[in-house]
Length: 278
Image 1 (cartoon, one colour):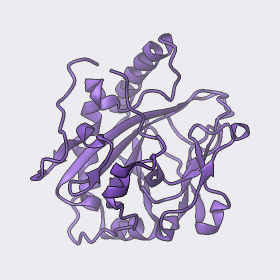
Image 2: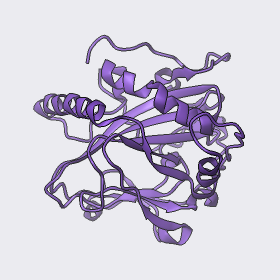
Image 3: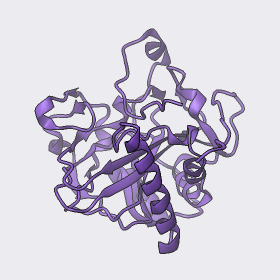
């Protein structure tokens, strides 16, 4: 299976126009969260992200890292690069298991509600001395989804810090709505292809440092990016994408959405099963 990238420009098609996208931040109103605290709910609504949430213990994340090491070696042997393992839950059973992990789903359900879809999985692996950065951008610019009730869980497979190019957030920028961007230039060495200029005016920069096994969660409208990894250490994270079940997808993206909590009475999401291979 050739994986679909989680990040790709949304073309100006009739299907997307008919979707009539609602690109407003929808704050969480959960007064009885199961895993998060009321303060964390408030922080997410105000800042657009949470970070340093523990999920996997050292033994568990070591096993996950060993799995990824093997997967990466197999992918590189085919001529693909370290950023190309995308929509991985449709191809690899172990990634499907991470996407549907109850401890992660519990965190997301506290923010998005009891009916939940997991639709994306993409490894972002910066090899030592990689030299490529990720410009300030909003995830919502890439995804044909509406309304804007989607979050990314970023699982640290390796420790992520400033030296090896951890993610950076612009706290509060999700309240500015959908922002204008331009195509990135080759000189930017951007992993993606969009750049929001003068982005710092929209929020306060925060380094999303994480220990391996921890996660961060951010809104699809939050401006974020990362600097290049100029260190001698790898920085790998697995992004897991979730949305409320009432979100609608254009461009056939619904076929990759797995029902991980509650139900989808409309049958909009494809709900594929676990792949047999890892």
